[in-house]
Every structure is written in structure tokens, then in C-alpha cells.
Image (cartoon, rainbow, N blue to C red):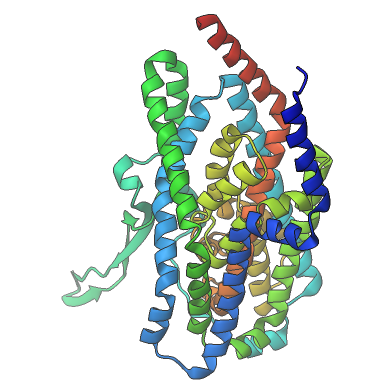
Amino acid sequence: MNLNEQQKRTLLNKNRKERIASPFEKIFSHIKMHTQLILTFIGVSLGILLGFTLRSANLSSETIMLISFPGDLLMRMLKMLVLPLVVSSLITGVAVLDPKASGKIGLYAISYYIITTILAATLGIILVITIKPGDKETRSEVGEGTAKSTVTSQDAIMDLIRNLFPENLIQATIQQGQTHYTYEKPNSIIKSNSSMFSDESEKKKWNFKYNDNTNILGVIAFCVAFGMIISSMGRKAEILLHLFLVLNEITMKFVKIIMWYAPFGILFLVSGKILEIDDMGNTARKLGLYMITVILGLMIHCFITLCSLFFIITRKNPFTFYYGCLQAVITGFGTSSSSATLPVTFRCLEENLKIDSRVTRFVLPIGSTINMDGTALYEAVAPIFIAQLNGRHLNFVEYIIISLTATVASIGAASIPSAGLVTMVIVLQSVGLPVKDISLIFAVDFFLDRIRTAVNILGDSIGAGIVDHLCKKDLIHQNHDIENQIDNEF
């Protein structure tokens, strides 16, 4: 169709304005387009600056709590949206896919998760063996650990499987099960040769208790099965599918509103966490080489391993992709929770990078729960660091065990702040290392936890980009089938 004179004139004026746009106008246009990203970055920067500035004031715990209050509100708002977002996105993501496409996406995603997690753990082992941050001098400075744990690696793995099949779905939304042991001291009186003595041996009793933490793995398992059944029912379940589609859209609108508050909340969240740390300078001096080892490993995995994998498979610039999900990464650094950042990750991938929503709805909720590259690397470095502190020389088989258990432990780690410290018990006990020494690295976990959370988010995002590229033809084919079906109906 030929353009009329008015359309030609409008197009010509538009092109002329674009050609004569001043550098100031271009900068203003760029700032306007990325306002939230810039504000989030400013919030993190000011939060770090404010936190270090106020440390010299020796503020009371009540004052620090008041400073952290706006950040606490942000965490509450983000966590409020996680459950409806996971439920709606997973059910609709699985339901709108045909079984062939759904199977491919699942296969590619799980394969990616396993490969990158093992690569991260292996990289961490290589670095900590090479750098040796836990020498004898470090041991004399950091002292003895005090943490205790009675849960074995077998218990942790079985808890993971138990939580995958929740007995009460409503309970799974607010509580997660975990193995606990109690010890009783029976005072049985035994007669022997007219004498009496007391048997004070402790009796170990197993029980499965629930803690206040969303069993997101159980919710995901149910939602995937629920979505598959909706897909198999066809027209009968259209009303229910439409309900979850609308719920997903409403949740994302909530996310857009909250993201305008996020820079303000992150500012006080970061500054409050910095103020809570005791004797930061002395701790950094004692564990500086350990921190460098972990950070170096995370950077190599982020900018070499993941970038190479993304470029080899998609032939696209990974740094352009990283830029598109930068706001999610910064938010993850501020909140230290990949789960709380999930709403922002959805928004970045779908709006900035134009990743198919059917892929993000399927890949991101699962990835935020089981794909923890940064945590796997961290949980491989820390146990070997502790072994070096104790003068323990590990053999090749023990390194393999650490690599595998770090992978499993990262899958079981909750996507909440410092969850890696809890699941590290599995790795330590797998090679007979003292669990009490976990307390030695508590002081620096605040900073390392934020960096590995950012890497976890990048790993999830890169995974979604790779799966989207590999399944693009199948998704386009499915779109054509839907269009043909609609045409035939009308």
C-alpha cells in the first residue's frame, strides 16, 4: 500500500527530528528509558556510603532497626508477591505449552542447571586449592568455631525429597519441613548384686518439624503437575487457565508499582546490614584471602563460564543480555534473596530482553529454587578452606565428594539470605570436617551472600535466554498452530 502525502510528511518530520536531536536530548531520552535502573543503582551506592559513614557513630541496635525499617518493608512487599507469581506463572507456563515444547524446555533447563552448577563447584575447588586461603597463620587469627549441628547429609537429602511432596499444600505456602533430633536422658534404675546404679546414656529421637519458611519446592512440584493436567483437559479447563493468566498479569502490575519504591528501600536495607556487622575491618583482615578466593571464583563463573556458554549456544553478545537484566542483579545484591528478586527478574527478561513469557514462566521459578551457581561455588570453597584451617589434607575422592555434595546442597538451599550456610552442613559432614567451624565465616557472609545471589540471578537469566533460543522454533510453530485453530473456528 502506497503512503499518502500526509503520512509521508509525518515520516519525514520524524526522521528530521531524529537526525537533529542534540546530545542532551539523547542523554535525557536514555535516562527516561532507564529511570528505575539508575535509581536502583543510586540506592545501592548511597546505602553503602551511608552505612560506612554511620558506623563511626556507634549506633544502638534500636537505631539500626529504625534505619533498616524502610528496607524491611521492601523485603516484605517483594516476598508477598513471590507465592502468587510462582503459582500463576508456573501453572500458565506449563498449561499453555504443548507436551512436546514443555518437555524440551524442561530438558534443556534441567541440563543447563546441572552443567553450570557442577562447573561452578569445580571452579571453586580449583581456586581454593590453588590460592590456599586457609593456611596456619589464618587459623591462629580466626580462632575456633562454635556452631553445632546434629543433622546429617542423609537427613538433608531426605528432607529435600519430603518437601518435594508436601502433605498439606496450604501449610507448604508458609512452612517448610526439616529433620530435628531431641535427646532424652532416661534414669532407669537397675539392680545388680544388691547395688543400684543409674544409666545416664542419652537416647536420640528423630522427628520432622516445620519451620516458618515457604516450601517453594513443594509448591513448584504441585504447580507443574497442576499445569500439565490443565493442558491435558483442553477446553474444560479454559476458565481456570484464564484465572491464572489474569492473576499473573495483576501480580506483574504490582511489581511495576513496587519497583518505584525499591531504590528507597534498598538504600536503607543495605546501610542497615552494614551497620549490623561487628568489627568489619578486623574480620576482613583475617578472612581477606578467603573472600578474594570466593569473589574471584564468582567473577570467573559469571564473566567467563556463563558468557562463553551463552555465546557458543546463541551467538549473541552476553554483555548486552547482562545489561538487560541489570536491575534484577542490583535488586538481588540489595535484598540478598533470589526468591524476593524473582518478580523483578521476570520483568527484566520479558520487557527488556523480550524473552518469551512461556519460557520465563517455566524456567525462572524453578531456576530461582534449584539453580544456585553462586551458592554451589561458595559451598565448594568454604569446606576446603575449613579443611586447610584444620591442617586436613583431602584426597582426590574427597574433592569429588565435595563437588557432588555442593551441587546437591545448592539445590536444597532456600532462596533466602545466608541459606548457603545452613546447607553447608551437608558438604562438611560428607568428608568428616568439623561443623562448628562454619561460625568462622559468619562475619563475612553478609557481603559474599549478596554477590553470590547476584550470580545466581544471572545464571537463571542466562538459562532462560539459552532455553528461549533453543526452543524458539517450537514456540513459533505452536503460535502458528494456535492461529490456524482460531481461523478454523471462526
